[in-house]
Amino acid sequence: MKATNFKIYLTASFILAGTILGVGIFGLPYVFSASGFLTSLFFLIICCCLVLLNHLICAEIFLRTPGEHRLPGAAKIYLGKWGFSITAASTIISALGVMLAYLILGGQFTQNFSQIVHHPINNNLATIIFWLLGTIGITFGIGFIGISEIIGVVLIIIFIIGFFILGAPHLQLNLLTKINFSQWFLPYGVLLFALSDGSAIPEILGYFHKKNIPKENINLKRPIILGTILPPILYVFFILGAFGLLGREVIPVDLVPNLIRFNPVVGVATDILGIILIITSYFIIGLSLRNILKMDLKIRKWLAWLAAAIAPLALYFLGVQSFIKIIGFIGAVLLGTIIVLTILIHKKSQEKSDLIPSFQIKIPNLGRTILIVLLLSGVALEIAKIF
View 1 (tube, rainbow, N blue to C red):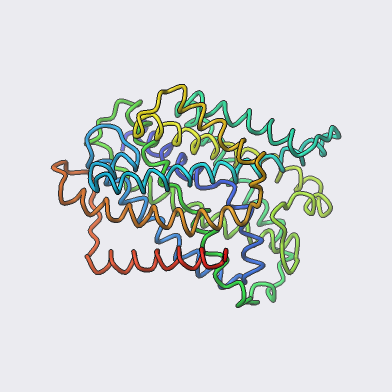
View 2: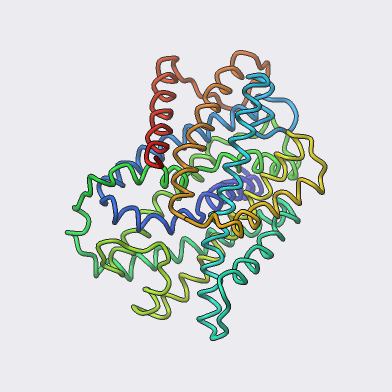
């Protein structure tokens, strides 16, 4: 592979990894401590395999489909109006929910930073400041994002490794063996949320298009595998570091105040890099939502931008602010539904499309059925938790 192509493919991996490495990481120490490390690790492995499969078949769908589409557009082509309606609704609600979750924690981290620099502001103002910064990425698009993702992912990798090195000597192994059976299902939705981002796949294809690489010459398999597997590995290091540094039965979602009491430098670094991590993912999700509204729902460009920019902030000020409940619901219910639809779209695309992509994922019919049943069971269990 030529040096230029290597850089392009590595950037594609970082776009995916950087999008996955979002706000979900800060919910993981809480989930692993509340449910139990071993239980959560089991769900991490299962969800990682499921998400990797979803990202690969999602890429194959877009490589098989002429023109530029997002998942709702592909659903309309291969499943018809009913598939389009369900996929569009699930995708849009999911994207809005993800952006809202990012906004909630992004605002908290911004407020933490204001306290660190001794110019404290209230949480609402901090959230508005974070929102303004996030809207810049939605406005400028994938060219701006590609650069930010490389810088962001490199900094995050350095930070997580440092976080683990500091926490490992203080790690209490007895904390890793506890299991809370009353919270056994808690990790599923949160982990699916923390690991998924099929919405980045068409943005990666758009990045290749800007580099003048024809669709038939794009091989997304390696970038997707690297971009999908890197985040869960980093998550484990981060979680172990959090267990070591905080050493508590249940670790709070907002780590920064506790870390500052333990080590001010670590607390400040966590807050600054947390803002970088959250905002780079906010860019991609917002851009993806804007493009879904513009390309698949045929909404005017300015109106699509306005909806992607304003809707998360409006939901926040309407009082939807429970972080763990939001990401658990998005992961288990909305993303679970979207993955089911992606599996169905993938099957139809292999049957109907004449385009031959650079790679193909073959799933036996029995395997598809089992996956769909398990995913719908996850949807039902998460909904049952609410009631």
